[in-house]
Image (cartoon, rainbow, N blue to C red; front, side, top):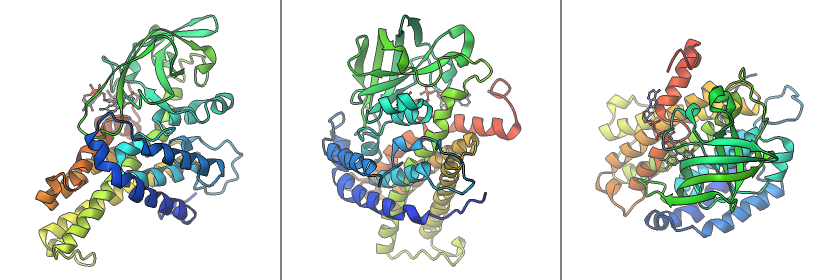
Length: 404
Ligand SMILES: Cc1cc2nc3c(=O)[nH]c(=O)nc-3n(C[C@H](O)[C@H](O)[C@H](O)COP(=O)(O)OP(=O)(O)OC[C@H]3O[C@@H](n4cnc5c(N)ncnc54)[C@H](O)[C@@H]3O)c2cc1C
């Protein structure tokens, strides 16, 4: 199967529609919620209802965080641009509008992507329409997610959860949290399973919210679990501990969510590039794509370099999503896309601040905000260094024990 690295034509209307939403509904409230950290952006309720309506009518199918479920229909051998592709394209357009507000969108949490990725059909139906956040990180566990200490102990028809999760995006506002916990610490990473814990479950408590550098519209919570009883049927996927499979089950989520985070960086960088191009043109800087960069002004040459960096990330994002839609294993490509886009997002937005000078640094415009917002995209869902480690292991054929 060959990849055509152009925007799929059939997704153009969806993309244009989302772009209009980003421009007319997110941009106007961007600064407001950057200033009012922890205040819920009520404007998003209408937007989320619109997205639900589109999904129900079949028009917006696959767009957003829930769109990453891999197709279970029989493979007809034809090349597909499906739910993963529409998700990355629509999420990047939303993030062209505002990354923090996109992350705060009801029913579009990373927990929703986890459910879409690993839930069985019954669970998929049961959790349809809920807003789910994702809780992996703990005070003693970040990149080393195999080291999770939160425990889940079977007691009758319930699991009893105990532990603490930190930095849970939408952890306060979401209807449920997808919690990673271990069934048996002795059995290592194969025993780590994810559990859907619904809001209001006794024993689950939001302790505090973080103050952050960027994405201030998105709430980031610390949540504790104390003898928190969760119905056994809320364990996502299989309860079996398959030591041979190891971490593969839980990790499958990342193959779908990392391209999505890459698309956020792509969208935010595009916002900065679009704004800076306008600014340079108004200042009389001509950007000529037919002439070598070194023969142009320093500002034009820098801009061309930033755009090529952007283009590289954009193509890797398309590749990772396309492979997911076409049922090809994409762990390495998902990490490549996330590594490249995460780094590019920070470099491009900060370089645009530099090119725009005082305008770039001022709160009068959104450039400085985009530079702050983009940094997180190089940290969560696996940092830059961790993505590079994963790619290196795949390229060199080494296991996680051999290359740490
Ligand atoms: C705003 C925000 C939102 C978040 N949302 C969520 C969420 O919704 N759910 C969730 O579970 N988590 C979330 N996180 C947590 C995030 O996923 C972690 O911060 C991330 O995984 C890194 O873990 P850490 O902060 O403990 O850093 P560490 O793992 O302690 O890493 C510190 C530094 O060391 C580097 N490093 C670590 N190991 C290696 C290695 N083997 N080789 C080379 N370098 C290495 C890292 O890249 C990093 O630069 C969020 C974080 C933030 C800031």
